[in-house]
Image 1 (cartoon, rainbow, N blue to C red):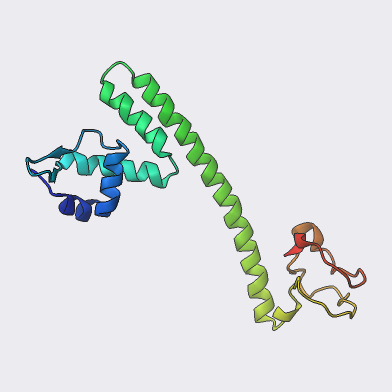
Image 2 (cartoon, rainbow, N blue to C red):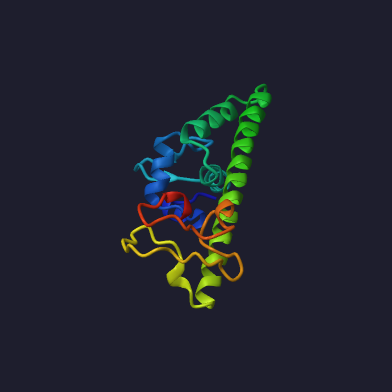
Length: 171
């Protein structure tokens, strides 16, 4: 069944502009066919490939790497190990991204718990403020549970150093 660029855009979730970009960059598995009047014609396998291609892009695979994969596919049988190696490299890249995002999520959850605790106790104003310019000594009494907006190694006690510039490490 022949599909117009508008139909492919609707089915793939990509804009017409994005489809033209994918074509210009050589990212379709098969060359996009055209009618005698120049209108693009797509097929179901183009839509299926776009679903894979957009996942590769959203996972961080570069256009150059997708193009390399497509070129290997177009060459046909005999280079499956090359394709497999390319996919394994990207798989390792995605796994590393997931680990890094997991660590970032852990930090964000920790910070959210600190802020929630301070807001519930009505002590949000005690959270560290890098623009604080007052010259009064900081509160040196230990916090009621040791939930402060400091990094874990600094969570043992409040900062009782004389007022002055603070380091950015405790935001």
